[in-house]
Length: 396
Ligand code: SF4
Image (cartoon, rainbow, N blue to C red):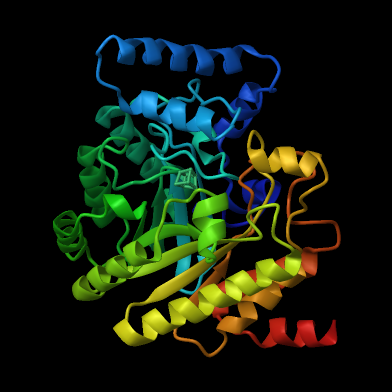
């Protein structure tokens, strides 16, 4: 899961002057396991498509999404009330590259939809969102006065649909080309374009084309692929979290990316499942840092490890564990302990400090008194200077 960057929801609003209406809509759609119209809608849809399938009608993307959601014991609804001409949300971040615009386009939800603690698809639609609506979202984004005012400062754009931007079934190819054209036109100093995707949708000829188009802007723009890893431990990643990502798949991707000169961003979650202790969560990220450093060193690929402390996403099995007292989110001091391992390594790191409004009450990793850790981690995001973090850990 990309998951989950920036600041907490309230400060996001202050920082960016941008806030997603979808948060409110989403709250309106929040469903309880034992009742609710929205819950009924999901299950009715599943039953309807199952009947169609048994009658010989081919299964569609919507069916697969609904079935994966149901089989993964998720009880959230999709946000069908969202205005399809507006992105789900967008905000700014400060990273080592400079000012970053993070945009989550509103599309059909993630086709995988199985990952244990993930409710990102709840901000999306179960149904197809066509290319015209998606192109209108691009216009809404770039015509927003706040974005337009910062256009010349923007160094990086991260493109998400809470799923896979390279999945042509859920993210229109026409709209993707249109987005790149408008970025070339309107962001004169764009240095990096990041596309979030699952590995199975990576198609080198398509990326070659995109990378060529990105060279035509005023500033040549590097292409970065952002891949959700979530946990490094194989058994936790695939056995418990159900990520469906083998290390061999990732390693093939690194070799491909190295051939084309693209960059990689790897999303990890600290302590993503109930079975993990705080200490095991730190060790898992240390193992990930060692692994990515080795691949970056051997291939020369620029790799960024994006670490999201896990929040308790509503409507997921993690929420059920949290309610039973079997899970608590990681501490920010442990996030700092995890990240300092990357000092002096050939990778960069970024701590994602937002739950994007998707945590259940009490399920955030930011607790009262954590302000100093938030500030130090944000400083690390900008500077990659570990000095203050290391000194604070020693002092503590
Ligand atoms: S791939 Fe997994 S983590 Fe990513 S959006 Fe889909 S279900 Fe969530």
